[in-house]
Length: 85
View 1 (cartoon, one colour):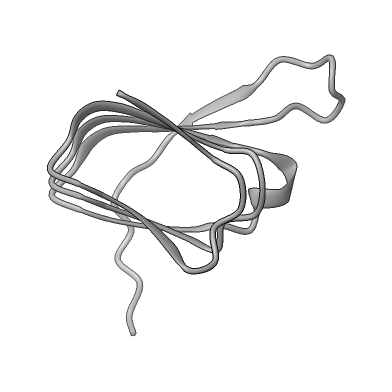
View 2 (cartoon, rainbow, N blue to C red; view 1 turned 90 degrees about the horizontal axis):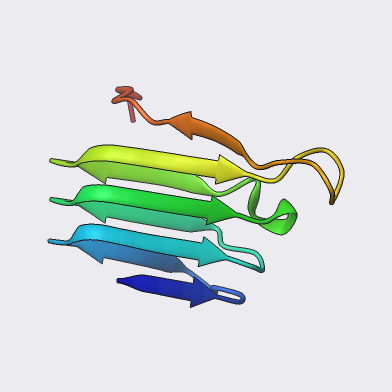
């Protein structure tokens, strides 16, 4: 399944999914991923400040745009980081 977002006001939530791709073409303040396997997130230059939270999820990859429009996307994998509240 694939979802393309333009601008998100609050949060994009991905819950109980397998093999989903989300492409953020505008600004997105927060993305929440819960109980999901195989999630690919494409962020635009407007979404580079996006906060990503996840729980009970695996195989989460984020693709970021290159420095120039002609550059390849930069791929990175997310790991669990515990941030105290």
